[in-house]
Length: 305
Image 1: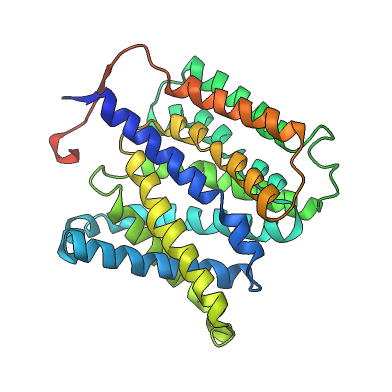
Image 2: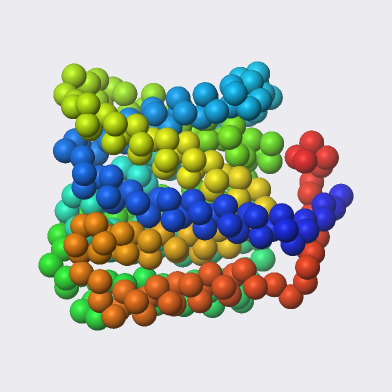
């Protein structure tokens, strides 16, 4: 059976992925503004994100609307594990290395997404995806400057942790794309946020009393902005966009992270950053530009509509 996806819906999917990536690019600012452990930061990010999602869902559709998706609760266990591991690695890496280094190494993720999408999702590996990936990798490398990946004085430990985060992040989009279609969006984000919150609770239970009102307000903003809003946009975008395209389009995040670090954290903005930004934008354009106004994709059964 076929489903026709028109150009407007596809463009909306691209915009949702790009918006999510820009929102996630602010993460380094939040982490640097907080004097808490990575576990404490992530627990509250997902806790407040989970609460925000429940409130939004109850107002828009009612909590009963989540009931059909909960039947597929097992589908979200592995994505929740990958999400927690990738964000934990990213948060730890920001303690030891620069925002640019951490963002670049986390964004080795699309390499794994593009290479394993044909195996896990039976997606055809497109030539333009390989070209866009190559251009985007050059761009993120240029953002770090001309001195090379590990010669900027950043801690090697932080770089290795960020690289491990990139590996887990790369497989996240693949597992989300395999989930039943009716889950993706608010339901998948609600379940994922709830799972990660529960998993992190034992690690921070002894430090719950260590907080300031200023810190809690920043954590609240982090949860609502990054998790409730940004992650939901990403999940919704995956309904319309190929996993390998989504992985490459999110290269806008290291560009946003680098620019924000330069503006607010006074990390140097070099000609390499400017050149890298242009290459990242070019990589995104390679993915987005299409020859036809409509695309036909195969759907296994009507229940996934």
